[in-house]
Length: 186
Image (cartoon, rainbow, N blue to C red):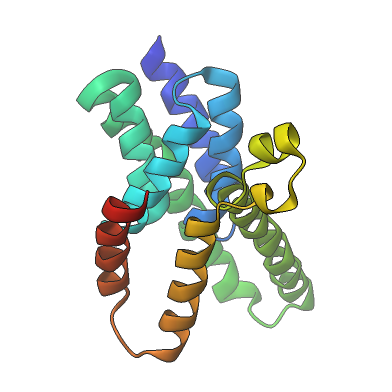
């Protein structure tokens, strides 16, 4: 039964996540809340691991979540379920686009999907920000404004943001540096 549930949840996620892997995070957050297969904290760890390993983030998260929930077969099922809709949709869209490439209605649909994708990605970013950089529970208990922020995590995020935008270095280097810094400051 768990395999059918995994297939269903990840098939629906794959069917509806427009905008790539980061757009899957709101779906996975909902999945964490409704299925108890993994916690929000585990989801954040999955995101971190998936961002630092080769491959698409959504596929990596599906594999990890499926494996954590139901072992190797669960990982395989979740991954396949996530990919099937993309394969079907890409095949259909390729056929349709070749016929209707000049159709303004098709252009309008794709134009509208861009802000929808941005909204999903922004929601994912907000969730990661909330759980990684903010300490709302501490702030609510103390009432001290500076307790709202995890200052070490915020400083690391700002330094990496600036460094990534200024330096022409591979992102893997920044991930490795962050991991080393994390050992010492967290």
